[in-house]
Length: 266
Image (cartoon, rainbow, N blue to C red; front, side, top):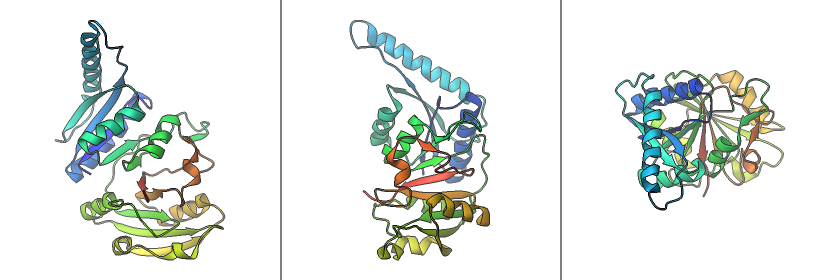
């Protein structure tokens, strides 16, 4: 996870900066670089407008730098990244050229009465991007990731390099990884087979029968007190129904620890 990108402007400024600080602290451990990204809207390209657009980009970059000056960078390279247009298009485009390893987002910050865990923009990025996504709770302070709870329905991981972020966490922090396999009503016999690379990583393995995925995860979160929850997003799998819409309701799922979402299949 050498290149970590954090979008600005999706939450209140103080909450966003706390998330950038988390990214910096994580990057220091991993030896990575942090990109703090903020979008600006370019004007139509005609006449002298390219000069105006250049100014808008420079103004956005200066705004990012001003925000970053409030943080302790701890020797980590933190790059102000003004992006043209819409985040949902600009981030994948930037990723093609710069190989972003991790995208750090936050849940909705509308308070306890807000019904959403993920809003329209953050939910869309989780659903549509190829980049692994780490969802960090509000004002969550970084601690070494010693215990990981990886929740799956199927033990088959078909997407190439899907496990790389977890492998890097394991090698950096010497983490213990507990695999929780949640068996719901539509569980298939072939789901019990655990992929070789995954099997080699885990410290322990436990299965659970629950009516819903949320019940299974909640039960074992309270039991294991992990530093990180890891799940997979795929067409038929543990969190498939959550990603049908761009938003995720708290009643369907919520995590009060960092949540790592990986692609489980192409």
